[in-house]
Figure 1 (spheres, rainbow, N blue to C red):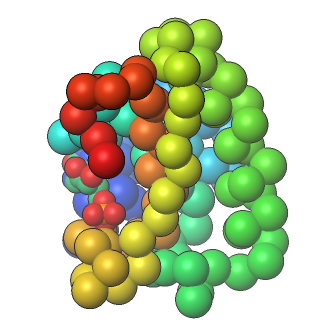
Figure 2 (cartoon, rainbow, N blue to C red; figure 1 turned 60 degrees about the horizontal axis):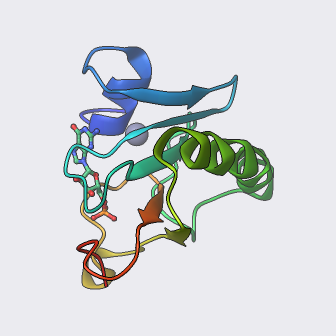
Length: 113
Ligand code: 5GP
Ligand code: ZN
């Protein structure tokens, strides 16, 4: 899709630290880590936000999330994990290719919330 930065990451044109990949879904470390292991989960299909997400894509995406969460838990050993998603610029969305944030939590003073 045009000049979408996440489509470029899927294509391999922009490097990213990959956490997980299957036919439909990719997960990689956020370039700006709010906590250690902050990961973005995206569908390979370019869909802008939750309003555009098809049920099929939503299903493929969420089906992968438990494995990704467990990979993060194993690698970074957080004591909790927040899952969040911003839709629309007024809600804080800055990249208009749907993505979920997986934010590992380490207790008080971990820098988030
Ligand atoms: P949003 O604000 O849309 O919910 O989240 C977009 C996220 O994408 C931000 O947390 C930002 O740090 C991350 N991001 C933007 N550009 C890149 C990039 O080129 N590579 C990676 N890995 N993350 C990016
Ligand atoms: Zn895209």
